[in-house]
Length: 275
Image (cartoon, rainbow, N blue to C red; front, side, top):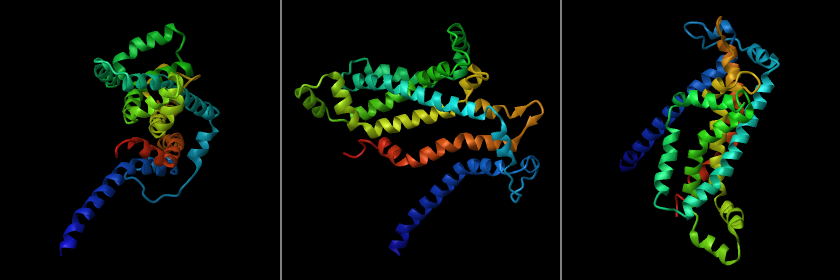
């Protein structure tokens, strides 16, 4: 009897966990299924749960000559923004973690507060700056915006990971004659590699999924997949099947990449949690 009593909370937690997981996953499943419907099935009311699958929507998406152009822009922008953010974030987090001042905590909070600012609130000045510097509709300009947007989160995460690295290890490196660059590259980075990997993965996902700045600062030359998906909304209406197919193709690479990197992501997010 006591054993059954102990199992009931575990079973209840398992049911709740599966229910939440299915609730979160259902929109993705519905998007994938809609991509295999015809346009008539996609807009039918009530929705057709049983339908004849078709690849016509995917064929129409691939048939557009600019699909790979949008894909290249997304990959290049995400990698460039993530790499640049790490180049700036690593030394910033290093200095704050190992050489803190009385203003370090306030600086970190101020940086994080900028991430909470609604993007639409700074759209006009950012647009004017991008126009005056000839960065409108350029991959470099979009990468810089994403870099600056995600930099506070990257610095915060790296700062947390670096704080878990034992200071005596760095002091031992200094005693062996390591200079500042060697201390970071040879001693610190290998020890914090799981945390850096999870930070890079999170930044890549945020850059890949960004839509606000993509739709407002690009038109055709530097537009990423977010703009490509938005193109299926026209004055004639929404093409739900093609929209779902394009969305599935856009999120599939990052989903697959995240699936294969989940071990590194979990390891990085729990870095230093158990002493």
